[in-house]
Length: 118
Image (cartoon, rainbow, N blue to C red; front, side, top):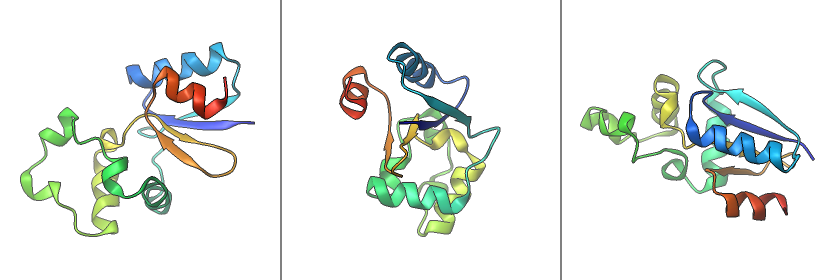
């Protein structure tokens, strides 16, 4: 089994997730989505699998709080993808893409234990 972890190289949560995967010898590849932007269609697919854009976007982040009020209410998929392309730090981290195409976001020790059966 191989997974792809999407996140930011400088993100502490992504570092913790990578360390966990290394410790439990789970093979993975890491993609920094600031350096390698994720396609709009992929973002839309992730949002659909997670249950909507609200599940993909980190609204407790400083980036979200600093947005202009009119930017905080995207009304369509293209508006959401444009916002995330402009502000990649808004995506919850890390995004875990499994071989079967399933997607999850975030990191906790127990969450990863359940996700990877460790």
